[in-house]
Image 1 (cartoon, helix red, strand yellow):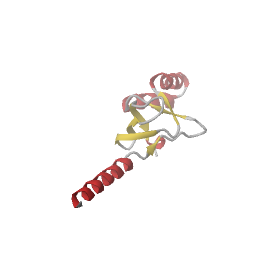
Image 2 (cartoon, rainbow, N blue to C red):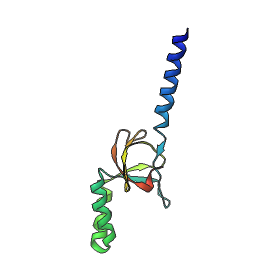
Image 3 (cartoon, helix red, strand yellow):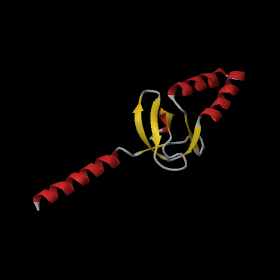
Amino acid sequence: MRISTVVICAFVIGGALALAGCGHKLVAHNGDTTVSVYPDENTFTKLANLKSQGGVGGMIGGLGTGLAAKQVDNNTPVRIINSDDRGSQVEVLDGAFKGLQGFVPKDNVN
């Protein structure tokens, strides 16, 4: 009887730890309903630099974002694979893009 209690407790603790690691969601800002998930951090950096230039470069950066990034719904659950000071590499856990892996800026992950 004692061994089965230990096994059940181990499963409960393992399940709780697994659920605790999946508590992140995407967060849209400024009235947006979607968050851009970029293929990688380098793509995000290049497009952000183009946007910041303004003029023709800014327009190209805006078009590039529309083509390169997938638009994932606000509050979609994600798993953080790794992160740095600029953002996180995530995997989408639910919705139309379930399984998608990509880069999200730091302020778009909660």
